[in-house]
Length: 557
Image 1 (cartoon, one colour):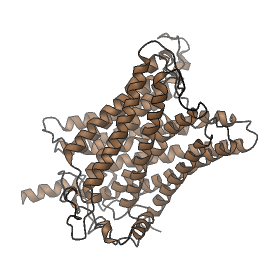
Image 2 (cartoon, helix red, strand yellow):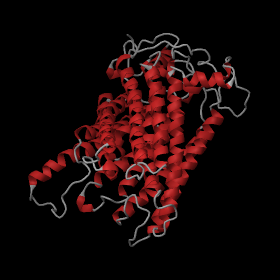
Image 3 (cartoon, rainbow, N blue to C red):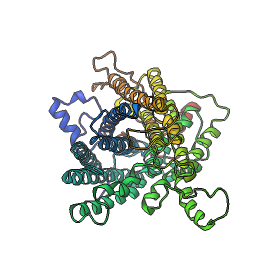
Image 4 (cartoon, one colour):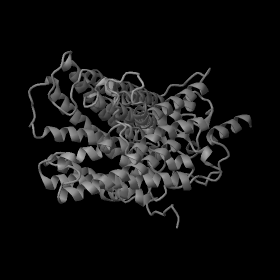
């Protein structure tokens, strides 16, 4: 048995999709494809739609919370809106975005002809979409946590289980690809940084989401029967809430950090220094997944009133160890990645591009969210049960969105054979930064002012309406960013015909050549767009930066 499966859909994959006839044929080719480039784009497209819908929910909740007193929407529907927003950030957006970019790009970076088990990855996409639809239907019909319709609560649990199984299947395909399909000569120490981050993230998904599936099975059985063990519909959140907050969210955001790590040496035109240390930094971010496996209570440090004295020192130590492991080590990992990148860039003149700007700003936002995750469990700060946690999560998710957008722009030549216009994309990176800060930072302040989480009403001193109005504007700007990015990409990433020319549209993006970024890794040695099997011949890798080596050899000769 081999992890690489043969496929009949090579025709038209290397050229434009216009080479395939009518729309039904095109749709069938996409929906049954085993081409990793298509499967990855299906995940990316679906998750960007999920992101837009989540931003709309954020807008609606922002409108509801601006006043802080009167309830505008049906009071019975508000809990479902909060749940849609939370699940939308993680299950509809964050996890599938990272998986989608990984599926699309990792085989390129490994010098592989295909993704391992591509049909498994495609089945994972359908499982994710099917589960997403079931969850939305359940929440729309009074299901979910605390839902009043028992059948819809059951559907909610089943839908989440199906979504998780789909994401597990796709992650298994990614991890297997990195471990088994590398080109000859590519040892694990030569794996590109993005592919390494994709491996760590996929392993994190494989460690954490099966725990979620197990909890959902227990909850489903209990809810269908006596409802005596897990708290019935009201107790669901106590058992699955860990999967939709920090620190597990860090491992889902890891591919975005990998994009930034990949772009740092390219931006400064330097070889990656201390590669092993960067691998370690990326791996440290992944330890957040272990909080799901151990089920430790890492969201609360009961030190209230203890100050810095030594009373109950043993208990304090027992509390601090899991806190440090799952909250501090991921922060250290990001700092290591960025510090090594800065060290390698010392004395160089950067060539700032839109992919780098997206990636750099995205990692900065993720780091701010991680720091919020460090503060949130400290009981003396009084942040538990407030909107502070929501602010930290939005920082992580929207920051990861920026990073993934950078990856899409960076690898667009290999996926579509076009480049996204750089200056408009830079403008969108700046707009996304503003959106992320406005949607998150005010809730850091409101959290210290004790605004309750998941509630449309509040009463505290200070500019409460201002904080919530800024968050409303932030979600609106993120929706605008997503729509503008989709429009820019659709306009620029027009397909090209079989001869490689324009598809008859002057607004299509520029044909970029094989290596428009002067990049370092092996995918930039094949054509743009890449052929169906990625490489005309199986490449042999002799270093971690084969594209850079080839250019150096050409210059010397």
